[in-house]
Image (cartoon, rainbow, N blue to C red):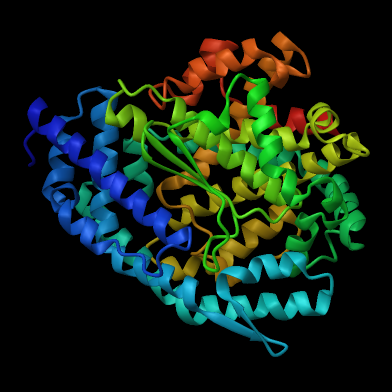
Length: 494
């Protein structure tokens, strides 16, 4: 039986964890920003091998005595232990995604560009060929890695003292069972709403109802090409700067924020944020392409950026880097959803038919939340299963039932969020919907133009991830986190 660690030992591990995460984040930045071909995790794990030992995880677990920071360090140590076993698969998968290409109609297309190619392709038959090419590459090259990694994680989880991965996260304090019940209720309460609103939305964008659409149509639906003129690439960053300025934040003079705007061939096409040092060095990586989805992604990542950039340097490592990820995802969604807010659209973009577009955005949000409800229910089954591969048809069953569009079974592992991050997204959507309701109630529908609203946000951002999303909501509005609040928001927009 593992012995508890002294406070000094815990402090040393915490400091080591800080450097470990910083090095992993820097490697992530260099690779996905297109500055480095390889994705070299092994040297980082070797430099911090003490953090990934089984004995370390068990000893930290034995030290948990109700202290939240120690519990967060325990979770980190367990994830480091499991991550150490699958780092080779993670490295290889990232390298393959960066180097694989598909030949479609005589054109060589990089694997990472296939999704955007499908999204931007107006010809349905070619979209299908692109999708099938992506699935073939995933099945042949990536799924063997994903399957091997999943099986290793399942095997090693038992050595951490839990019968399975689900029970491990229950031990970390994840309220998975209560959230799963909220997911079932949400799927039931919005079933008819999705069938009606989703069908109109799909027909309006691609001329097909949800009963007729195939998975290769979904990305095109999301593309919203008809709205491109309203979301030009050249105005993305200026619109973000102006929106933050309304809240009292000057993006260009934030010395701890780096904007990576350079266009590189292997740079990820989607914006992302890397908080290498919190709050001293936060990087917002952008490859502006324009269009509604690109704008939403930029504002989402800007939410992460401002949260981490405003986090108090006096907080502990656990309070800055670990904690409840529904908090940072909630801040990301708060800014992202400005791009589907009719008042913001009219003010910032002189937007045509803002309420029509906002209604479409609400339908897309409904799709996403229903999708993640189904994903969480699937992941709870998958992560407790003895035979991972046997859950492949269950992935298709649950996602199809929620969305009325059949997904590809090749994604049954690639579409899994490790560490039950899907639960963080779900809680973040609820947190954002309820907090936005509070901001509107206090400062009106144009709350995002009020400096005092910005002052409140900066005050809350300053707390990093010390409080949970539930605690922030209770502190501000007095509410408890409810997924049904997202359904209420969607109904209002529709």
